[in-house]
Amino acid sequence: MHALEMRDVSFKYKGSKQLALEKVSLEVEKGEFVTLLGCNGSGKSTVCLLANGLIPHALPGELSGEVRIFGEEVRQKSVAEFSTKVGIVFQEPESQLFCMSVEEEVAFGPENLAVPREEIKNRVEWALDLVGMKGYNDRSPFSLSGGQKQRVAIAAALSMRPEMLVLDEPAYALDPVGRMELYSVLKELKEKYGMTVVLAERDAEEAAGFSDRIVLMDDGKVIEAGPPRLVLRDPGRLRGIGVVPPQVSEVAALMNSRLKVSRFSFLTVDDAERAIVQELSSKGRPGAR
Amino acid sequence: MIPSREAASTVERLVSVQNLKFTYEGGIEALRGVSLNIDRGEYIAIVGGNGSGKTTLAKNFNGLLRPTSGTVTVKGRPTAQMGVAELARIIGYAFQNPDHQLFCSTVEEEIRFGPLNLGYSENEIGTKVERAIDAMNLGHVRMSAPLSLRLGERRRVSIASVVAMDPEVFILDEPTTGLDAEESRELMERLNSLNNDGKTIILITHDMKLVAEHAKRVVVMARGRMLLDSDPRGAFSDLDLIRQSNLEPPAVTLLSHRLSDYGIPQDIISPEELVLHVMRFGGGS
Image (tube, rainbow over all chains, first blue to last red; front, top):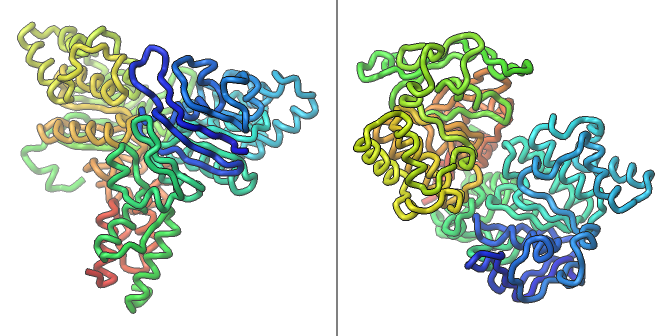
C-alpha cells in the first residue's frame, strides 16, 4: 500500500475554467521524502490539498481519476478521518496558529480527538523536542520568530501522530535563518524518523540534498519524476518552467559544458566542494596557495 | 565612500540620515542610531533578517515613520517638516503585500489614483498612467480587476501605481516574495530599466541571490544597527557578518570560501564566475 497514490487525476476548482491538475499520476511510498517542484500555478498546492482530503471535501470542484491515501479512496472518507493519517502545514504560519500558548497550539489536534491527557502531554513534549522548540510551552505563538512559528505549526501537525506530513511551501514567509531552521527539522524528520513527507517548493536549494525523489510539475502536469540528480541535471530547463535551480547544480552544468563531459552533478555545497577539490588536485596543481 | 564620487559634480544627495533612532509604541527599539546617505541613481539593497530594522529604516525615508531622534533629510530638508504628499512625489514606496495597496476595480484606475491625489492635471495624469503601464508591462490587463491577477502581475500593478506618481526614489519592500523565477526575472528587469533611466532604487530584501545579481551597494542591518555599507562583493566576503544579520550567503559564495586554498577568490557571487576561476586554476579548456 502506498502513502499516496494518484491515478489519472484531473481537478478543476469550482468557478475556474482551467484545469488545476491534468491527468496526474503519482505514487508516494511509505517513508519516502518527495519534493514537488514547480512555479506558481503548476498544480503542486492542489496535490497537497488532495493528499489530506481538503480537496474535494472542503474545496469543491470537478475531480476525476483515483486518489488513495493509505489505501482509502479520498471521496470515501472525511477530512477528520484523514487528519489522523496526514498532517498538513501551509505557507503562512500566522494562518495556522490561533492559541494563547505554544503548548495549547500543539495539544489542540489530539485534544479534539479526545486523546487521554497524559498521552497528549507526552505527544506535546515529543513534538516540541523534535522541532527544536522544547521549553517554549508557555510562550505565546505570536511572540516567536517566523522560523519558530513554522516549527510550532509542524509540531502541531506531528502531535496528531500522522503517518505522512504534507508541507506547502513552508519556507515562504521565512528569512534565510528561519528557512535553515525549518529545513534542518525536515531533514531530521526524514533521517531520524523515516517520516513520509510530501513537500511543495519552487526553490530546490535545500531539498535537493535529501529528497528521495523530485516531482517536477508545470501547468497542472507532472513533467518528470525521479532522483534529484536526474531531475535537476538541466538548470536551464528548470528556469524555463519558473523553478529556481540549486546554484550548485548550475555550477555542475557549467563545468560539464566547459570541459565537454557529463560527470559533474552536485546537489549540495559539500558535493560540489569534494568534486571540485578532486578535479583541481588531479590537475597536479599544489593544494595550497 | 569613495572620495572621487563625493567630488564628482553629477552627484546629487537625495536622502541623508543622521544618527536615526526609532522606537515603536510599546518600546521596541527598531533603529538604534543609523547614518547613511543616498545619491541620485543609486541601486541599493538594504538587507537583514526579519526584525533587523530594514523596513523601519526605509519607512523613515518617505515619512511613513518619523524619527524618534536624529534626522532624515530629503533633498536637503528634514522629513519632520515635510508633508506626506510632498514626500510621496520624491520617494515612492511599494509594499511587500500588493493586496494591501490595491483597492480599485481596474488596473488603470488603480494606477490613476496616485497622480490624481497629487493634484496633477488630467493631461499629466494620462501621460503618467501610460508611462507606468508601459514600464511595468501591464497593457494586456489594464481593464482587469487587480485582485483577479496573478501575484506577479499584482506586484507589478502596485509598483506601477508608484511609478505613476513619478518619484525620484523607489523603495521596494521584498518585491520578489512569492514570485516564481520567471515572474521575478520580469520584475527585476523592469526595475533595472527604471534605474537605467536615472531613478534611484532601494531594494529591501533578505534574498542574497537577488542582491548579488542586481544591487550596486549593500547596506547590512542587524538588531537596529547598520553592520556594513559596501559594494556587494564586500558584503559577500564576510560570512560571519552575513550570518550575524540572519542572512545566508548564496551557495556559490559559500563554495568559494571552502575553495580558498585553491586560489579561488572569496567574493564570488555567480556560478559563472566560480566556474571561470575553477577552470583557470585547473588549467581546463
